[in-house]
Amino acid sequence: MQVTKVWSDASRDIKLLWWAVFLRMMAYGMTNQILTLFFSEIGVSDEEMGWFMTLTLVGDVFVSYILTWYADSWGRKAVLIYGAVMMLLSGVVFAVSENLYVLLAFAIIGVISPSADEVGPFKSIEESIMAHLTPHNKRPEVYAMHSMLGTLGSAIGSLFCGIIVDLFISLEIFQTKRGSYKAIFGIYACLALIKVIISISLSAESEKDGDFDAEEIIAGSPAQDGSGITEEQDAEVVAEDTPLVVNTLKKKALSKKTVSLMFRLLLVFMTDSLGAGFMTSAWMVYYYKVVFDMSNTALGFLFFSSKYVMAASAIPSAIIARLYGPVRATLLVQIPSAIFSILVPFAESHLSLSITLLMLFFFSMAMDVTPRQIILSNTIPSKDLTKVMGMVNIGKTLSRCVGPVFTGKLANNGYLWVCFIISGGLVILADTFLAILFYDIDEQILSKTNS
Image (tube, rainbow, N blue to C red; front, side):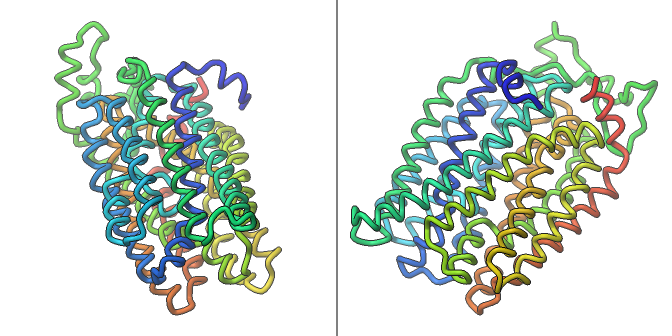
């Protein structure tokens, strides 16, 4: 993937979305470094941290469901603006309050990531906009760039946070650690403000319904006459010069085939996210702080390196997806990633080995992002894409809600390391579901993305 060419070929709106994901993930990367440490500083127990993360994700499920389901009706741009404003408000509240219930309320209705992962309606709507503005044969590179910039932003946020917190403490700019942590939330709010401006700057093209799915791929359904269109789907293909019919179709419920496909996607992605929820980045920061007593700067550099490795892996991920197809590509990188996760706690007495395994985990884990985006955008009709992507991301977040409660309990009893093993095992189970349910779509997708 030639990064400069992909950037120059992208439309203005797609470039704005790339800037938005970079700044958003930079903000998430910063708060990820200090969220558990901030709570510990204000007297919140490990078990309460687990419940906080779970309830935050539950709130995100509810808000994201409403916003993504109605995004096409209310306007994708308007929803992105609203999400950015709520992100801004959350940053302000965390910067000024220490009341756990107030913080929880704004984490639920606002946007605070408890894991440095995507929260809020942003990801599904951005991916939907990019799909509508990008033909099939350009999507692997566009999604890879989106993933790479998001991961790079998170990496820079992690490093910046670690350095700035230690700088605040060493220069005695703030009298306490909690003052330094609150300053980070203030910076988070400033980045959210820039995101508001970017969202406002999107053009009317961001509401466009791209006509790129004349051929739909339905997993488990053989192609007919080489086109991949079933009779039911063919009846739903509408010409560009019939906008009234298109508007009517947009209001229809999801077709039976789309619903069936969505449930299969949910099974795979929710199982994977269930595993990810047991050991989020915030808990990893806590693990390395407790087990190895690393400084804020060292932690920042560690997670900067991990995110940088993830960003670098986004480039070969597009190549692997083109060579093997998205399903095989996912299996090739996810299973080793799960194994590395399982091995991390067995290096508890060797920091260098533990970090090596963690880097290998992050490198291989991130390489499945582009293949998964390709599966979604190439199997779902464009008229249903925003809703289905929203439902899938909501399902993933809902699954992620389960883990933190148990992680908090295990951490409280000195068994945080067990969560690495649980996480890896569930990811392998998700890969098994993927192989069984979507084994037949690689060749069909390859014929479209490589055309």
